[in-house]
Length: 104
Image (cartoon, rainbow, N blue to C red; front, side, top):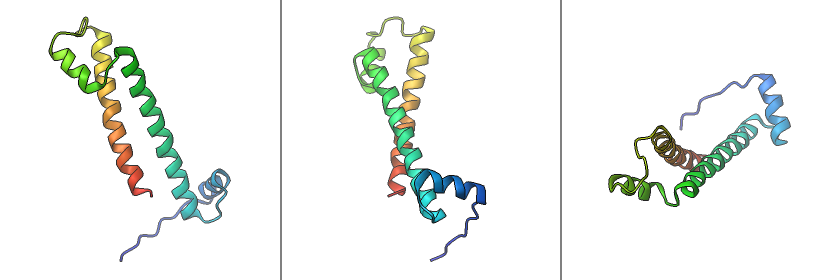
């Protein structure tokens, strides 16, 4: 098994130690990364929920409704922007969920 040595600057080690309460930099970094991914995942999920509440449906239902002409003003700036941001949030959630599996 090949391992790589990562050098963490002393200032970053101090910050990680204060944030996590761990003296070992490798454990502190792992905990900090887990927290960051969890925070980003929570924020992304909240954003998705906002769109679901606004439109009263999931993103896949929204796409079908768009294609069937059931979305009012589908080519308006607001709806197209929401569509783009909603899809991006779905993609971000997928990536963050994958990353969170690596950090177990």
